[in-house]
Structures are given as C-alpha cells and as structure tokens.
Length: 478
Image (cartoon, rainbow, N blue to C red; front, side, top):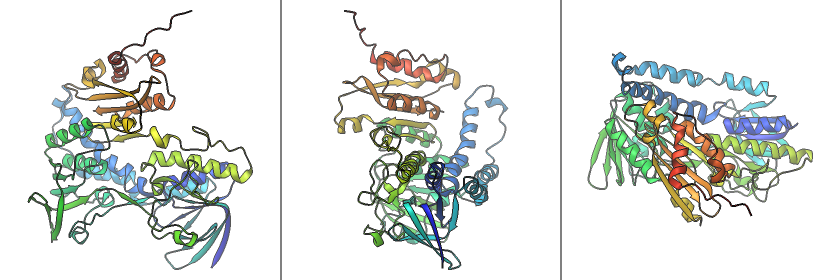
C-alpha cells in the first residue's frame, strides 16, 4: 500500500475534474486526479465531441444541397466510413495519452484506478492490478465523477442490451434500422445523426420532443426529422422491449410494434455516485450531491462536488464553469485569500440558476439561454414574450434559400431586461453567446438598441426583436 498527500484530491478525471485541479494548482496548491477510465472523460470520448463529429458532415451536405450553385456540384452520397474515421480522430481513437500529457504539463498528478472516499479528506484508490494507494488531502476533496445514462424499468429493456449514448457515439458500423427511446437532446441528436447516415430511424417519446425548451423548438425539430425520413412517435409510452438475435422489438402502450436492428435508450441521466464511498462520511450512495454556489457540500468544509454529479446543470460547459469557481475558491480558502461568494462573485456559479446556454445540434439547431416563458412565469416574473421569424432577416436569406427559423425573447417587464432567448434554425449556435452576455450583464433594452447588428447577418434578429417589442419612451430632461 502506498500513501500520498496533496492539498486537493479530485475524484474523476473528466473535463470538469481537470479544470478543478488546474485552477487549484494555478492558485498555488498541489493536486491529484483519480480516474478509472480515460482522462478527459465522457465529453471527450463518448458525448460532446464524437456526437458532434457524427452530426456535422451530413449537416454540411444537406446545407450544400439546398444552396443553388453548390447543389449542382454534388454528385455523390455521404461517405459514412469517412465520417466515422473523422469521429475516431476527434476521440484520439479512445487513447488518452494527449490528455495525460496535458495533466503533466499543468503540474497535476494522476492516479489510475477506482477511487472511493474512505474517510475525512481521504480517498483510497484500487488499480486494475489490485495495487492500493491511499491519498490524503490537506484541504479538500472534489467529487467530479459525472453521470450515467438511465436504463428505465421497461420490461425486457435491460436484457435487450440497449445502446446508450456511449455505444451510439462509438459505433464501428451503421445499423440499417434503429429505434430510439426518448425525446430529449441525446435522442433528437442521435436521430438526426443516424437519419443522415441513411438508417431507418424510429424515435419514441413518452411526451413531446425537447420539452424543457420553448414548445416550438420540439415542434420544428420533429418536423425536420420527419423530412429526413425518420418516424417520430410522440405521446407514446414504451411498454416492452425484446431482442431476438439481430432484431429488437419495441412494444408501445397503444399496441404498436417497432422492429429495428438496435435500440438506443436516451431517457435521462443518474449521478455516478453509487460506489465512491459516500456512506463512509454519512452521505447517500447513488444520490445527487447537493452543494452551495461555491460547490461545497453543506456540512462538510472539505468536500466539494462539481459537474453532473451535483444535478445542478448537466452540461459540459456549465460543469467547467463550476470547476473554475470551485478550484479558485478551494485555493482561496486554503491560502487565506479573500473569498468572493456573493451573487456573480469570483467564487460562485451564479449562472447555473437562470443564465445557462445550451445548443442542441439537430437540424435545425436549437440554441437557448436563460429562462423559457413557462419557467419565467413559474419563477414569478412579469414577462412579455417577443417572437420573430428568423427567415425574415436579410442575413438568413443570404445564408440559405428558404431559410426557416424562429426566435423568441423573454423580457422582464419590471426591469426591462432580457430573461431568456431561444433560436431555432440552421447554424444558430453562434448566436447564443451574444444572448448569454446580454442576460448575464442584465443589459437594459434601451441600451441594447445601441448594439447595432452588422448587415446582412443573422444577428439582425436582435434589431427585429427590439422593433417588435417597441422602442422605450425617451427620458425627458427636467
């Protein structure tokens, strides 16, 4: 048994854990990352990066086919093998040597193996060969173990060996037919990707699509999936799944039957916290780890949780945002520096509550930030909803013939600031950062009128939304 001591132990070596450790080291601490799989985690190898690589090529091909001049130059079909090869490059062929090199360059140690909290400020790591290392933290332990796909208790589903997002993004070949259970981001993105490969896709959603977003987002994505040849079943409950060799049969509550070569289950995530020793310090295994806005677990001045495992916001970029706050505050508390933990302070993740940006890389894309109209009303805001057709902007007409899209702005009527924005349309992902800045900065509408959009760009949507809302009355001099 080997024993080592550090200022900070980070349990989980994904993007979130890397950032916690890096910020702490930059703050003058020593840090070690514990990882049982690949350094870089879910986003690098089985989620964000490979999924977007799978989606992009078909998206570009569709866009070109809708553009006169470019369409006439296209004579072939999508090269799926080339798409998969590009995906492999994005994941470094599931080799984490580059990520390990980054840790070394950042001055962060790595211990490979399964880590479990074994006491206050202590983590015991068991390597694949049985070697045991006991790590002790002088100041803090940060849990950044992420989340796993949920396999819901549908009869026969687990036995049918369903794909989760991991199997879907690491495919070696494309099935002829595919059933997808779920209606959220993963389900709609994978439906878009496989439909682009020519797979016969059936998506089965218990309610609607993208139900946490503005209603028109799911409606437009569903319509597009149908145009791509997918069958989209909404308000449909899956009751049973069976596998017979290379065929999967999905039965629904309305008596329907879907047969496919494979089935993806995309019905949510659960915290990866069932076997990390939480019970040792009086916490519940398998539960989300609640934290305050500095990402500290209440009642434990040495324990932090960051990223998906907290259940705050299950998005890589938001987890990395939390990680920067957590790493900085751990270093500040350890060195006796001033802690800025008020709203929007240096050491808090305030944006988690009402300023979260997200892009769903379907076709059309869905880009949103802040509150939807429904969420704003639930939060007690007095709001006004402003809608505008994206295709009516000059920039959209130049971008693509027949451009179809929609924008919605949610305004806090008392403060005259923007609470939320949703864009649906081709290539709207790049609009979301400006919206994020407007919301985080609480830019008043009367000042926003002076942010002139360049012509002709799709960003002209901001002027059109403001015009639809109406210009505020000028303040008269006394």
